[in-house]
Each structure stands twice: as structure tokens, then as C-alpha cells.
Length: 112
Image (cartoon, rainbow, N blue to C red; front, side, top):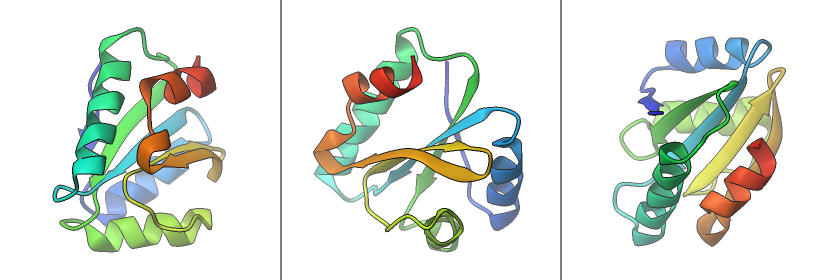
């Protein structure tokens, strides 16, 4: 399974609305941070295994798409961190982890 990248506020609003129908999983990723590179690897390792098919998987690059990253933090009332994985259900944060806690094991425990 693959993730898709969102870069616009319209895409974010659509994703947030879809969270009423399907879980949404988003990774906020910094392209300049080695810890974030590790988190991206963990996210991709989860998706290469047997990911939860009832969820959609998304990536936001926090530097390149700063307005989207900031809006996510505002809309979900979640402190911005990077890297950060957020599971969204019914237009609200269900679970979040950041930095070295973004692991395949943690994602698996929450989603599967």
C-alpha cells in the first residue's frame, strides 16, 4: 500500500471530511531532519507489510507545505512536531506519536 502527499488546504479539508468515513493516517515529515527520515522509513515499512486496509495514508512535508502543516495542528488541536504521525477519526485526533516514537511497532499496535 502507498501513501499520497497532500500540499494544499483543499486537500487537507477533503481528508479531514473523509475521516468521518475512514480512518486517516498522516505523517508530518521534514525533508531536512534525520529523525524524520527514520520515521518515514518506519511508516513505509508498516505500509509494505500488512497495513490496515480500512485507513488512508498520507504524507505532508512540513517545510514545503507549511500552511497545510500549520492548519493540521490548528484543526486537530495538536502541538506541531516533526516527525509526527497522527491518526484521525471523525474529524478529530485519535492518536499521535512523534520523533523516535514513530515506529512500525507503534503504528501496528494502534491500527491493527
